[in-house]
Length: 239
Image 1 (tube, rainbow, N blue to C red):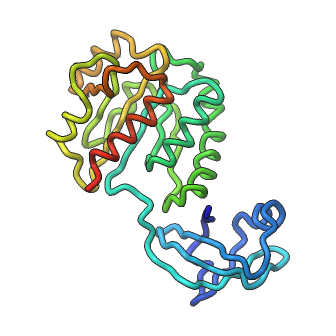
Image 2: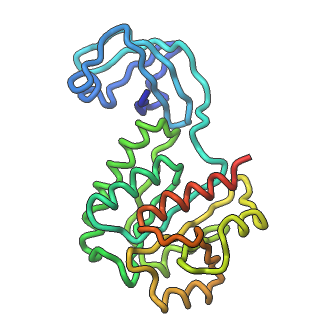
Image 3: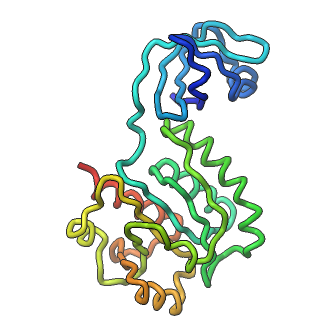
């Protein structure tokens, strides 16, 4: 069941009255009194409710059960990704949201498929995709699509940085088993464009001690690498 985001100020005892997503719920989804509705506030508290009244500009729902959401990772997973064209990038944004990414950092690389001005114009659209995907997969918090940065600008402020590179000798599985991700750690994953990283960027990784990891012998499309890479990190880091 998709859930909808509310503000905790809308909660009064066992009643929630809110106006967020009103038009979508009432006009598009044709919400009716008596129906169940799943809500979540900015503190990650999830509410299982039943619609009590639909007013002209707000919805009144009765709380049947509430509890802290578990739909977040125990560490901060950030993705620095070289944007792809059209539908492929929309897929990346959607799946990164489903896989628990805290922030998507659109990153301009040497072989980037999109021009800088095109990327900047797409940020708002990608943020909207993240909002809708968060509702569908019951994320406790909506991730952020950050402004575009160059590769050199995006690596600061993290506990570790991992770049996925083809044909590298360091399997991700081996690296994570020797260096497990700790609870609360801020991890940045870098995934390049279809054309791969340039020689200059490989040298950059070496200069700054960035871990170069492989997803195996198969050559993956960039959007597939995002799903496989993030999925493997989550799997190897789960208890």
